[in-house]
Length: 70
Ligand SMILES: [Zn+2]
Image (cartoon, rainbow, N blue to C red; front, side, top):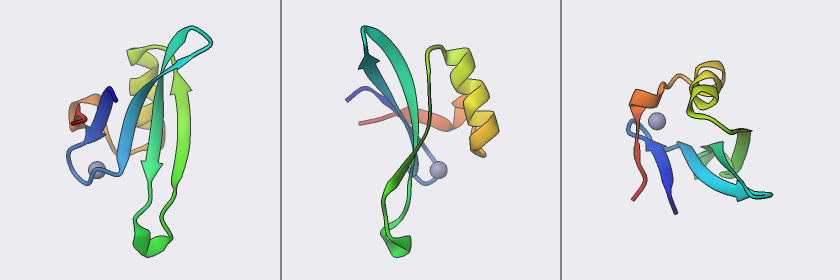
């Protein structure tokens, strides 16, 4: 899967989803199993600019904190 993950803890991930013919960046927070696990979709946006604003609003990260997912 294409996308990015934060370099600090790996719990913030951005995947690229094709939805209704459009590509969207989906920001997801993963919770550690110690607190029950699971994930929370924080938002889906259509541009890198919007992704940067979403990161700033919902996470302690910027685009520079993300690296390409393996
Ligand atoms: Zn992290």
